[in-house]
Image (tube, rainbow, N blue to C red):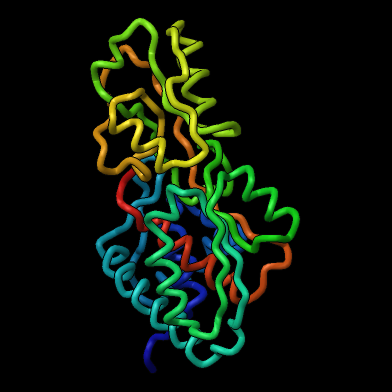
Amino acid sequence: MPVNLPTNMLRSFAAIVDAGSMLSATERVFVTQSALSLQIKRIEELIQQPLFHRDGRRLALTPAGEMLLGYTRRILAIHDEAVAAVSAGAFAGPVRIGMVQDFADLLLGGLLARFGELHPEAQIFARVAGTAELQQMLERGQLDLVIGYAAADDARALRVAPTHWYGAEALAARDELPLVVLEKPCRFREAAIAALDAAGRRWRIAVETPNLSTLKAAVVAGLGLTSRTGLFLRDVVPVRDRDLPALPDVSCILLRGEAAGTAADRLAHLAAEEVRALPDL
């Protein structure tokens, strides 16, 4: 008899690898930590190979685990594609997704095109705004999904990204730092000002804007410094001046509305995969 590896167990295996631990993976597959442990043990029994070994406090893949992970991702991709193909009508929209500009520039084309190919009957509504505004829309039932930013220790984090200073190096040496910021509320604006105040550095707002395209243009033009992740300013080199205060990391989060349906669940799954697969920030 051939060995059968259940897809739910393979999905749990991939979730543990992506999350970095069994505890973190529980938030992704909605299975308890003890149940996850039993699922991994069952896979190991079926293939007669260990999948993980302890590396300090974290789990590391064994050679067999590395090999199985590649096959697991391919199996799950084909599985999900098959389910989507034979139940296309169930994914008809509309699906309403909101994301911050940082993600929109990188994800809107690829993510929505991929979803559209799998579910051509679905209708998509996309909104680009700040995380706070998008969360309010989600709470009011105006959105089904939100991709945004939160504190680095947020339990809903898909991944954590470092925040850097960006702008002309010469500006960092000024007694009074010129800042380029978004209008309130803005997590990065607040973090930059708090860090400068804590370090006793003088600052002034040189440019304040409601949109990120203007912010980026102002930074590139040398009008001031700003704080952001490399996700948005990928083609701008961070300022390496050691006199600038350190900035807090941020997490990338995905939120679902209470009334989100099958189509939104599918888009959420694809969005989570896309965010986790982004290059280092």
